Length: 142
Image (cartoon, rainbow, N blue to C red; front, side, top):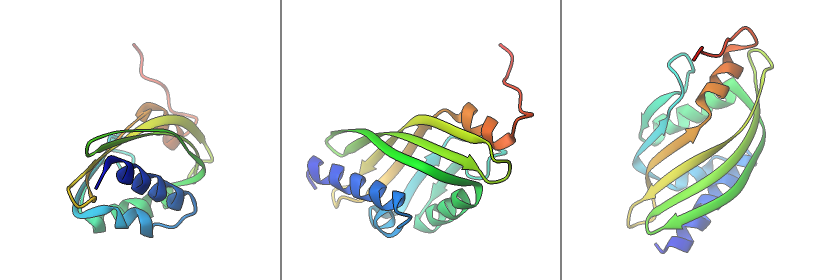
């Protein structure tokens, strides 16, 4: 697939995600996708997830954890088989009502058939963890 087609695939996946339609996102993934979210151990969806079934479970858990109120594509940058999406997200943690708003970069790597084989999230993990843990959470001392 050409780079422009990969950008279109990523854009369609995110637009569908924003509509709560997971099918286009799952269709963009290879069967052996390696999905990585760097969140800390006490956050239920931090770590590496391998395969579409594991990614589907990731999204089921995400929807149980947080109500995503806003998901906006800020920009998409692409070269060859790599697409980087800059995202702004706002969510409310279901367990405590704490709000998280922040930006992240999502790095997609595609194979020759146009399926994502790797997905990496780079985000404000400290801010997400503090919102998840609640108002009693204290920022680490420097």
